[in-house]
Length: 459
Image (cartoon, rainbow, N blue to C red; front, side, top):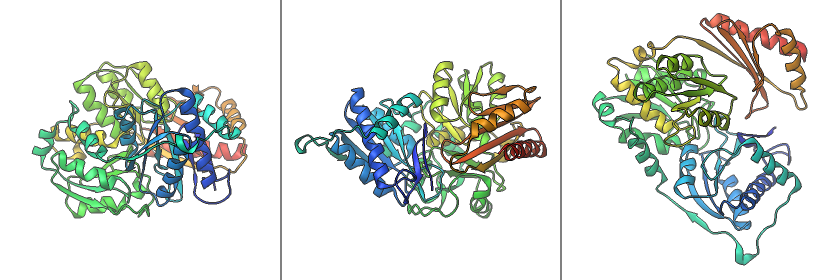
């Protein structure tokens, strides 16, 4: 069905023909290319590997591990883990890099190799191109039997990650405990089931109801934590009379919340609320990608900081955060990046900070959400056929809207007074994403529909 090579990793559907899907041959080829790049870079020869709970995870992991061993690379296997945990484990182990085997929010037929550098951060576009070139040339040299890499299975990263959250200065365990929260969490049949409930218990949340707790990879619903996929969680929050609901994606780097009445807190406002709390304690600058709500900019300005948008993609957000020396950042899809913990989206630290902020609030999560503006983002997509010429379409749209402010750093972002629309090809799926924001839902939807009509017309 699809094989996508981007700053978000090597991602594709399992099965099918080589080169068009994520087949065993593709997995070996790209693992070998990554390992060869690591050895050429001279950063060391230890790699940390972890995976989410996908059906194909074990198969993909064994192919990756044995390919790296064949190159003479030593592998530390974190087993069932989360993306942020593996990112941190690379730092803890002083490893040369890491691979997380996960397709994040994609459905069960997808999997991916997320590639990390020695800082536990996603590799940038330049390094990604080097790896793709190595893969295309199949420029690999495998070791003789006496020089094969070593394999180590290591436990304990779960507790290390939880301890890192508990010890973070702005996570207030005592006030969370005093709040006496009852929480329902949807862990979508993946590794959130292993990580989130123990974290909540450690934070002082004694009453935890877990939905979809079996780590089977047979996702009980579409795993992207969007409102239309969280109806079970909303109903459970109401039925259990819980204070809130929490949803994570399969690799636990995205996070969203449900209010006590079953309504959505809004994934865009996960970062806004956490940033508001962090900035109230530690004023500074912020970054989010340009598909995220303008509410973060408003919160940042309130505390005298500077806000800067980045292109979509975690590595782009991280690079801009470093340039701006931001104290908090992330993406409007519920991705929280806390730089003095590590430069990666992390739902676990996000939970710790959000619950701290909520626990300082006198009333419930619904009134907590009311502190922030009620902007609406209309999120849409158009599927792309193979060979589609997207740049030519964007050029025609630029001409049509030449009198409006246009940003071309990442696709096209067009401003209409206080509203905006962002068009871009996805890093993770063969689609065009069309996001529009306005103070009014109807206006946001109309802007998005207008641009979608333009795209189809210019096709």
